Amino acid sequence: MGVPLDYRTTEPVNPDVRARILVEAKEINQERGNDWWAEGLLLYEDAGRLVGSTKLFLIGYGSANDFVEVDGYEDSFMACRDAKFILDQLCRWSLEFGLTWSLDVVDPIGSISDGKYSPEVREFLRASAQMCKSDPEGPMAEDLRNKYPRNTLHAGDRVGGYPREICGNPEAITLW
Image (cartoon, rainbow, N blue to C red):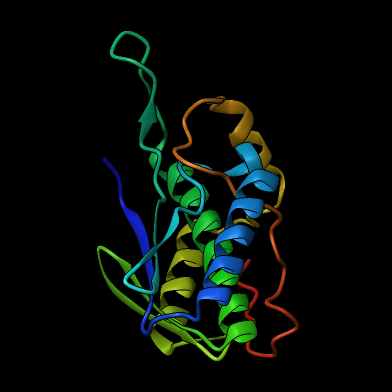
């Protein structure tokens, strides 16, 4: 069990757009492969809406006989990294297709609309960045992927490439 980032469109999505986003999510998962910390983008259709949930924290892995517990700070750092990647992707889809996404991490954390974070999401990202205190694409991320090798952990498909900004959006914020 872990803490997921839950995301869903607030309105039904045009079937062609929905199909395109589902294909893109699968492609992103394949491109990113084992770069996900706990889970990739898990996105599906429900009553015409796009709905997804991604476990952010790894906590530990392995079987009862060889369980490896992940350091709390390191787990938080990588969880923040994946959350930012996912939120940037949702922002891109929001801008490109005119979607509004509602977001939760246990409790509501805000929304993304017109390719922009709500003030609540901005605050969530600022708090995450303060907790992580390191560049998510810097050497620490690679060191942690090597420290905790877990080639078979990811559920479902996987996702790709870390965007440094959101589609040229002037609202894009760099936190690290």
